[in-house]
Length: 195
Image (cartoon, rainbow, N blue to C red; front, side, top):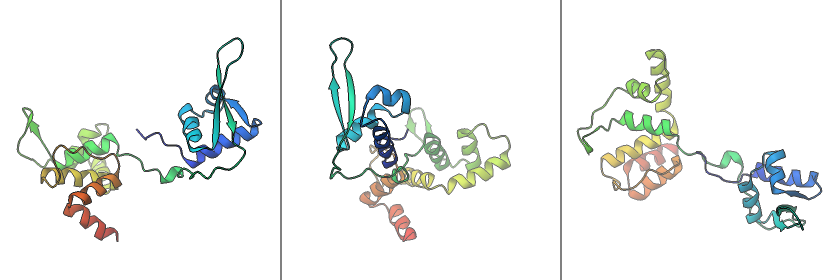
């Protein structure tokens, strides 16, 4: 699941809605009418772009009102949506694990076997109808940057270049950074290739 991070497009949408509605609107109305969620509004308020106030009427339940800030804050703008890195998906992680071929039996590590890549693909994506189609998809998936990073992490763990207790980072850049910090030759090789 993608982490909950406010992007610049959503912040612009919040500000556009507030200017359209004369500068104030209840938080519940944002969610009901405009599909802007409460965590987005709270994050925008934490950055200083809007202000949230609690308004308690004499009768009825209190409501939280969002106000547009008149002066432009000196806060740093959030990144664009395309700049927020996506976490590695579960199916990509599983394919990387199975394609590397780590096998566990009886709760302990045993011999490392190399299953064919297509078989690993078919185990992760069982809906593939033909083996040739699965082979073509598998070869594309092996070149995917997230799968390459996950495979490098698993190989580094097998070769004990990183401690076995370290969890796999969520993103591709997190994996390469952690491998570089650990002094793995895999991350150094990728850095040379990218440059």
